[in-house]
Image (cartoon, rainbow, N blue to C red):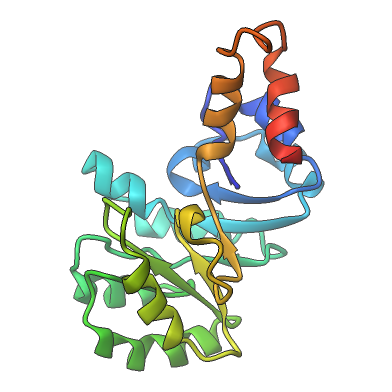
Length: 205
């Protein structure tokens, strides 16, 4: 699941995610100063550069600030390099010089994997797979990318919850968990539940 610390529900989300694996995004959490008290309660932690937020807002991520931020959490499972989702894979490679595991996108030339796979092995054995939105009806593309992944790498699918049934994806993230919680409260039979209770239902699901 993806955890947005800058949301008005941030403390509620933090409590609901207790004991769960979470993805913490620099774009939303980088300016927060109270997240330290919650991080030890999570089962596993993946740090995200905020590349998707950069794509949707047009506001560039400060790479140096991001790298400084991830250094505060040396015990996390992995942290992602700042990738460019638009297809500017030259910029992605330049950003990866600062560290973090790499990501291959459907907008990148497939030959780029020749550079990314050795890099992934050197950086903890993680590699990402991402799609430029819209992400629907791209299972064939995802399957092709996954078929090219060596089995010694952990493959994370960025916002690829709809493709979680593909066995080669070792982990995925999604914003659906808290959006679904909001939807539950609009149902007549469940409107009496608190936000914390609907979040608990979704997390257990």
